[in-house]
Image: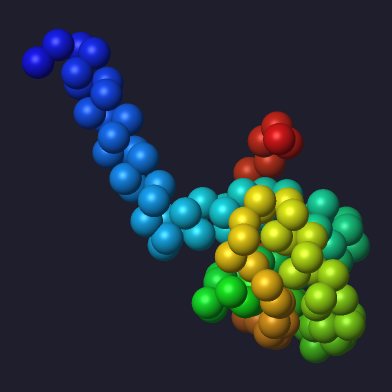
Length: 113
C-alpha cells in the first residue's frame, strides 16, 4: 500500500467517525465549552457551563439556584447562541440544572475560530 492509499484510508476513517452523531455532538459540545463566554457573557460564564446534550436540549449547569434562575430567564437566548457558536443544528433548547457540588470544569482556551 502506498503512502497516498494510507492517507486516503485515514481520511475515510475520519469522515466515517465524524458522521457518527455521538462524536459529532461531543465535538460540538467541546467547542461550545471553549467559547462559553461568547454564548452567555463573562459574568454568567463564570457561574454556568454546558454539561451535555439530551436529544436537542443543551443541559446547562449552574453553580447555585440564583444563577440557575438567571440563566433560566435567558434559556431561549442561550439555546440560540449555543447553536450559532457551536455551528450545530442539534441544539434547539436549553435546560438549566443546579450543580454546586460539581464545580465548573477547567477549559483550555485556544484561539477562537
